[in-house]
Length: 390
Image (cartoon, rainbow, N blue to C red; front, side):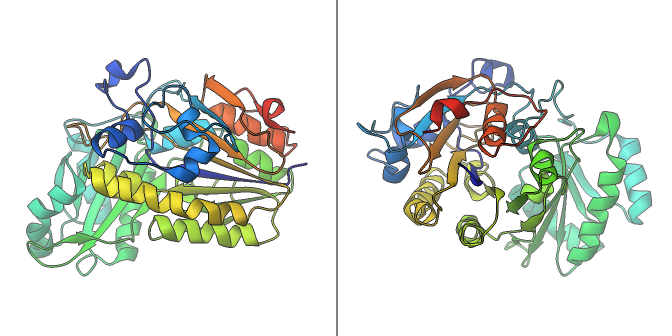
C-alpha cells in the first residue's frame, strides 16, 4: 500500500548523451559522469547505496553489491531539452514539437508590441548568459529604466531588472504581459523574471526569480491526483513549470538546501498524494556557468541530506529521485544537454536491487506514480510499478 510519493528532480543531473544527442550538438555530454572524470575519487555514497552506480551506462560511480533501491534510466521522447519539456514528460505529457527558440533574438514586431504594452523601451533582445548580459547592459538599464530582454538556447523570454530600478511587482507584471503575448507560434516554454541588485561592476542576481510557464495543454499526472482527492505539494519552481495547474499546495525556495528543508516539512505533514520537488541550483547556479567544482559540491550537499529525507519517509511512502535533462559543466557549451536521466526508487514497499533498465520515456515515471497511488490517469508512459512493488 502506497499513500504518498515524493518525487525529487535534481535539475539538469543527466547521466549520459541520448542516441539523438548529435541533433542537439550534445555529443560527449554526460553531466554526472564527466564531473566524476574531472574530479578523481568523487563519490555520492548515499545515492550509490540506492543503486546510482548500478544504472546501465553509469560507469564512473561505484556499483553497490546490494543496492537498497530500484534503479534505471530513461530516454526522452519529447523534442527539446529544457525544464518545461522534461517535467511535463515526467508527468505524462509528450511534446511532438519542441518549444520555439530565438537564436537571433525575438522578432522586431513582437518586441515593439511588448514595449507598447509595458510603456517603455527594452534593452538587449539577443541570446546571452544571464550574468554576462547584466554586466554588459546593467549600467544602461540603471540609467534609463529600460528592462533587459534576452533569451538562450532554451525556449525562454527572460527579463532582467535591478530591484531598485524596477520593483519586483512591476517586473512580475511585465512578465505576465509577455506571457499573455507569447502564445501559438511564439509560445515559448517560459517567461522568466531575472531580478538583480548591486552597483556598476558588482551586479548580482537575487533569489527572487519567477518562472511564468505555459499551462499544460492537457491534463497531467498532477491533475489526476488532485481529482482523486489527494494533494500535490509543489516545492521550488514546480508551481511555475505547470502554471499552477494540478497543484494544491506550493512553496518557493531560495536554494537547494531550502528545497530539501521544505520537502522534509511536507514529509512531516500527514498528506496523501504527491510531493513534487525541483532542486534548481545544479542547473541555474553551476551547470550554466560551467562550474564543475560548484556542481560537485551541490551534488555532495544533496547526497549528505539524503539519509535525512529517507528517515522522514513513512512506511507507506515512496521516494523517487530523477532529473529533467542534462547541463554538463565540463563541455564548452553553457546550455542544457540532451541526456538520459537517472531513476532511483526507494521505500519500505519497494523491492531492493531491481534494475529497471532503459525506459522509453520519462513519462514511465508519471505512469508508475499513478499506479502506485491507485489513480487512473490518462497519460503517456508505461508503468513499472509491478516490477518494484513488494
